[in-house]
Length: 326
Image (spheres, rainbow, N blue to C red):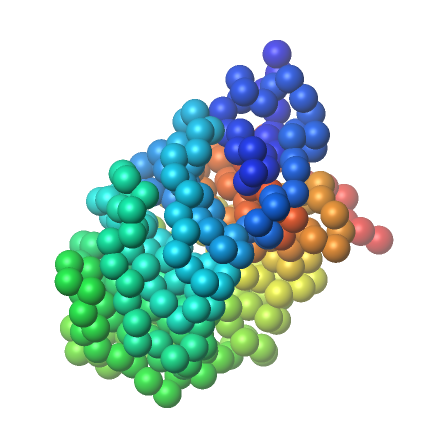
């Protein structure tokens, strides 16, 4: 039986090919009763996936497609998820202005962090797992001690609120600041560089695995690649026709995926800046925004979180460039 690209519904998750091969991928999708998929996170080993919707988080076993836990506690929609490097803790943040820590093994809530005065938009663990960074619509970034939940420090007066990311060595934090991107030195808390070039607000940032380059994207429909050592722009990737809300590098750093409100995911060659492929998930045109993209550790499988309530798996090694709309 031929291997197929898989389309899976959050309400009836199906990940492994043997469980999905009986039907065409598009027939596997059912709208999630709990709303659109707003965010996702995956453990570093690729074994556990978390998806967040309007009022709950679901943990899935990627290998078997089985639901592990449903996490409830947030009063409003969940906007960001992040697994700790040791895979034991999941952090979640959302419109209720709280950050919650969950035990991945049991699904139990460990603690709730409060301090932001607006919705939480983004979360990131430091590589050593000791610190959590949170970005909020209150125009601050807060740093939390993961062990005890205490607030360590706050960066204030920022125009942005959507994206934060740690470099692989944990020495640098990237954050959006309206139309710019700031690199922060974690030891001193001071700015290293400010990247300018986006024409509209930046929504997401992602470091390459080697930490030498940074990708940023947002409301101007472009992806920009930056040299972290010099602060210079390397190239601009164009092709999307609407805002870009999610970026993810392959583990080898050679490819980058961008998910957009235009209903597509584009795969880019990082070295040349050329578009390798465009993925167009079949879904309701009114609910086809791609809110989240993550690669599995093999770099061959890309997981998409869609506005229509589905999570879709794509084998990017067989994906082909689809014709552009005329």
